Length: 144
Image (tube, rainbow, N blue to C red; front, top):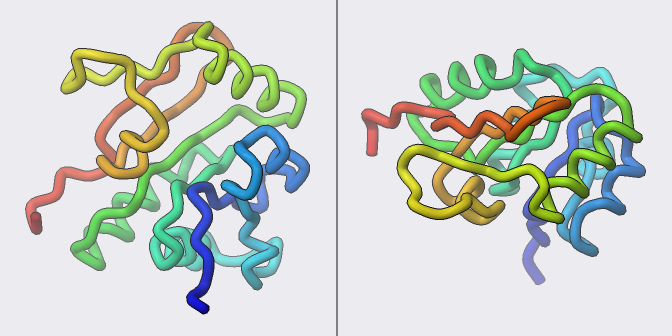
């Protein structure tokens, strides 16, 4: 039996309890996958890449770090979701996204983006307290 891949990987800046706010069984944490809470960010990014998971973090520096990782590996990741700090805020914003009060919009889509689009097209989503999230390309893939 092969290793199971979850759609979402939560890094240590996201409380493990937030897994409950994702579809059942769709999220895991970096610590559940064997990394320490203080693991190097590149190790967390590497784990998300290895598991083909959309990386969820509250660390705004991760977008730059993911781009660096991709440039070094010359391979695309599987998306990035950056949330503000605080589990209650994160829960509220995820509920607003799933309830349609906040919309994922990207210039290349003529419809609202969904989480599979973020994963499959390697998009970065930065969720703000107010307004819709910023949705951008996580890489400019010259190798594909």
